[in-house]
Length: 549
Image (cartoon, rainbow, N blue to C red; front, top):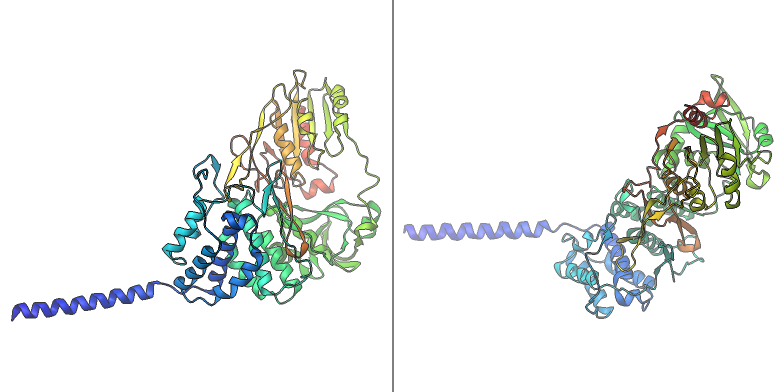
């Protein structure tokens, strides 16, 4: 009797265990949202485009494949049905032969590489994950139909239809454009790992915004927001902007305020009623700080300072000839009607004297790199050969003469930059190129060198500063630069709009990142409103002070 009772208890508990196990198994497979399904399609679309040998040869109309599979993916109900769709798609593309030269463990820059999504067991079955892993390990090695490298290493996007007839495409093509751009960044953008927001998270956030964009303007703002998430001063898109009138002044962020810091044209600036040192508080009765917050999510910039500065220009430009401003001047708050002009109505100060170089005093020379050409360099250094110090102003955009110029401040060649470029044979990974070097001369200048930098020091000027910083007796003075070093890739977003991103990755030889941070600064000097009102160039004055010691 006792044995029978024990057997009954055992059977009951076994059945309970099986029931609980079955219940847990049936409930642990979570529901996949529409956004997740669409995101998975976008990732599969891009992965196969750049990895699959048959797709990479251009054998398929790949955009039409996306359009065909989108409704199928949306109709799936769980990971089994979702994975079945993708497995069938992959099988129909043709056999992937084993690759004998596909190196998985080369000397790559891998901070941007992330194919972990392809092994996500919440979304994909083991069978699909295995197929994706196999394609990664046996990927296309020859030149891809959709992407190639320029001689300098950066990518060139090829054979992409631009759909210029679509001013405001329907939902499926809006998503297609999003995925084209997202995957270019995913596999070939050198600074993806430095963005504030994880790039996978960006995709999940932007899918609903692209789907719900109800008109051309909402659609374009979604694209602007997407591009701004790169946190790259080089990143932009050239939509025709109806804000075609501009204030004839420069606005800088000084002491965390929007300050009139320079005139683009003296006579027009006077007519606009603005003066140097004016602090802008409101625009058409709207608080400028609030407007900056609203605008900045659509504005590109590698760091906070650049994003805010660029936001000033966006909110101050417009279609009207006048704009109501509330300003602070001489400690008095006042309202003015400032005039705005078409860009063609004025030129940058024609009266501005373009001084390439000058003697500040008997011991100190000054060079403005904005105006120096290669043929000027020898004469400048002959004039300054007996000076104790030279101040080199890089708060501008110089000619591409860093190597020639660096001969005159370096007695030996020195590495000044590490460069890594997209590796199209293993998308998402990057390869290091030979370190870049300066020029040199035994007759190079022997005195002290001071470099001046600020937020106008961008791209080529940051690159040039890195080369000049190798000089033996150099000091860099100023404030945070634009943080967008190196070259630029230009390609077309769908509908034919030109868009740009940074091309190659640039590092100091010690691995220090210039992207977003800007170049290394030895002595930080930030301009002040008081200094501006008193006509002082505080960065230059600090350099003169140090050079005179």
